[in-house]
Length: 332
Image (cartoon, rainbow, N blue to C red; front, side):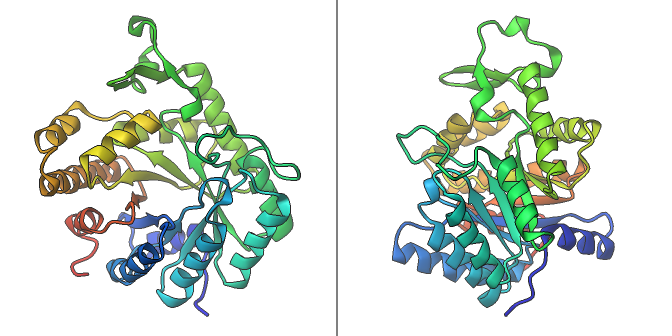
């Protein structure tokens, strides 16, 4: 069985051996078909050769992929030499089911959990499961209370605010200077997380860290300065754990539009213009995804990002192109 290490310890070891240099990590999701699972497993070795510090596997809405998520994490950890970071959500999950997942991870030497509230299944509202937890904070506290220091615990950070508090703007001229830095302009309207809600978001994030979280991974971001402001605000609030920016690997035009609309994400007009210019050319979109992704990552490192967390969307052309473009891996 492969040795399991906590992400926070991997970061400390990497920084000691490579002062001033960033690392990268990758994220996958459980495919819906057997063929999809086989295809994803075939990519694990390719990514492993490029040297990610760790690899995330998401948890389906409402625990719908719980068994598959755990199984894929065990395979990454013990067959493909990838340090696995298993996502775990509270949504529709009884406490006993969460402990089954945690015990399975522990038995397989998977030592990292990304603790999330999670999204409800499509078409349903979020409700706490009887015998379950209300939020990610409860899950973090439960893991620390019952599993001690065995697991490294990551949590999500939202530089632009959680989607639930990013609201339509009636009058842009009434926004504060700080609110303007989080202003999101989409075809369906203009949105922002208010200063009041943003302060609550930071305070809640600190409570998760105080409860035992030791790493923060952000929602996907497309503007580096948004990350820089977020980190500064976190540090001012007394949050001192590593904060890793999440970067979407843009592989297709429609996916970019769907995700930015779904998450109410801010993005540079130049990025949208570059994608619009090649929207009917799949290869062109991927080329823009790589070049703009590399540019974003370099700026994030300039702003102090210790590492770069890549949302691969289970695809490898853009993510591998970005990794190699940043000089992390020379072959795969």
